[in-house]
Amino acid sequence: MQRFLNDPDNIVDETVAGFVRAHSDIVQLDPNNSRVVVSRFAGGENRVGIVTGGGSGHEPAFLGYAGKNMVDAVAVGEIFSSPTAKSFHDAIKAADGGAGVAVLYGNYAGDNMNVKMAQKMAGKDGVDVQTVVANDDVCSAPLEEREKRRGVAGEIFMWKVGGAMAATGASLPAVITAAQKAINNCRSVGLGLGPCTLPAVGHPNFEIAAGKMEVGIGHHGEPGTHVEDLRSANEIADDMVKLVLDDHDLPAGTEVAVLVSGLGATPVNELYVLYDRIAGQIEARGLTLYRSLVGNYFTSLEMVGATLTVMALDDELKTLLDTDTISPGY
Amino acid sequence: MESIPNQGAGVIISEIAAMIVENKAYLSEIDGKIGDGDHGANMAKGFGRAAERLDPDGTLNDAMALLSGVLMSEIGGSMGPLYGMMFSDMADAVEGAEVIDAERFAQMIRAGLDGVQSIGSATVGDKTLVDTYVPAVDTFDAARARGDSFAEALSSMQRAAETGRDSTTDLVSKVGRSARLGERSRGVVDAGATSCCMILSGFATGIAARLA
Image: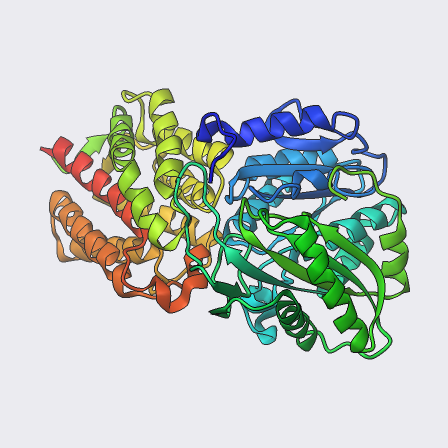
């Protein structure tokens, strides 16, 4: 694939520079750390701060979800690599308004370590930090071992709910409880049709052969449950719905929010082709669609493919989902 | 002489950094087979930057503390915090020491291992740097208990580290990104186990050369 590239070693800095310049009405760079993006609405007096962070290459995640009633500060890592503990710590400082900080992030080894260290550093500053670790990817581990599952696009609903809860003036434990409920109610699955390449490495870090697809693929190309022959969009949509809902066990009549995200190189129109069938299948199972998002919300460089996320809703989650948000990504 | 002065031992960290930078492409290549392929680049960036800033004529603990700071504040990923904690706890273990003798070195490498295990969740057999580190520390202690000289114990430690590194080839990854590959991770040496072996070997040869 041909790329818009200067020096691959500078690609993250250049991405962040362009991002904060383009969205300067909503975000700014932390003056003390060029790998921390801060919402212009951050640091509200006595409001719980919301922090996230992760590797780059997933844009608009993670930095695109900084904004009003969403995430207050985002730690930015190298491509597909956790931000440093220092960046998480600086993001916590930027988000802190005196009522504590909720760090809402995805379940990956590096992020777990760096957040843990940042939490320790922030504790020395006297900032109360609590975490929610997203684990919505159904194919990454069996349901009995949910704590081993990776976090994927369900994180967007977790940030949305956590940010909206913080905006009500709720306490840190209440924000954590709401964000935890959001991710507990999320199930996601990824489907890969083509691999992606780290610009600095130069060749794909996994293969998907022509005419094949990988079911259950992760956000960095982590292998899924199996590889099979590529089939029609409707058949794939049916499989994605089945994988997600068979893990969910929702009673008929449950209202749900649905997110269909492209992985980077899939045209948006194909996402709508998938969505149309997905929505029909979800309704056929007796569930009610309350809210749908379709687009490139959480990508993996130029991977070809899509993820489906379904979040079960209750009255509280519906209210929080309806809260106004201003952010480049949502 | 059975010890080296702490002052001036900062140069050993410079030598380890040079070895890591020299092996940048190799570490990325083996990481690329079951990981993202960025281990060499990240390690070379961290160790290279530290080497530019540290004082080789200074103490071992100052050099390790500086390296730890660079890894933790500028590298990230998994290796930043793991090696960052390792060198931070190693630095604490030798801070204030006039000389590094076998007993002090044993405390240092044990403290570094405790640091790694306090933040990571891996145990022996998970196909990580722990597979290099644990047998190296245990072998060093066993050599001392036998009454071996410092130089002999260092040499035994280095061989144990190499054996531990090589043992990861036949293992299935249990922790970190390559764990997602399951059986497909077998047959490739672990990149973290390899860089850990370079670090421990660097201590062994760097100290042994100065004991004479």
